[in-house]
Length: 108
Image (tube, rainbow, N blue to C red; front, side):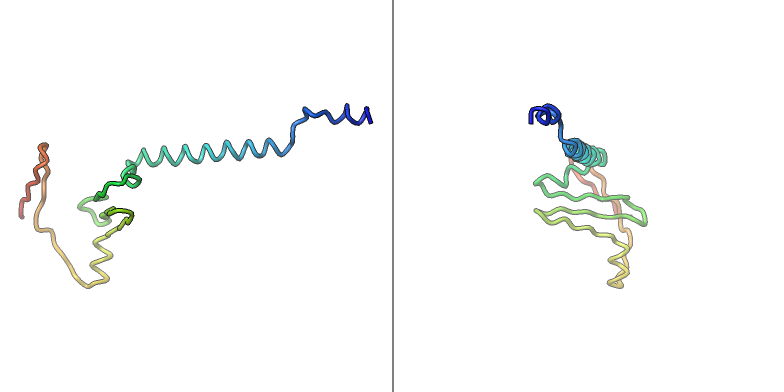
């Protein structure tokens, strides 16, 4: 009995303990990567409580308008909407926002 106790000391580590530690490290890495990507692509607005509107690729064929109202996030792609509804539109002017916050519309 004494010899068996000496061979299996209580301070021996569990081999599966290393796997658990690797899982913890991987989870920390994954969360850090997600935070870095969100901050890199300026997507922090998605997690705020404020409503907002964002335009991706303005004036191009693949333009998208993303709006957040409360908990709902809506994505509007003009080309998809126009094809499905049969309606067509055209550019009628340009809006500029001054440093003071005032918005000026210039018709074409």
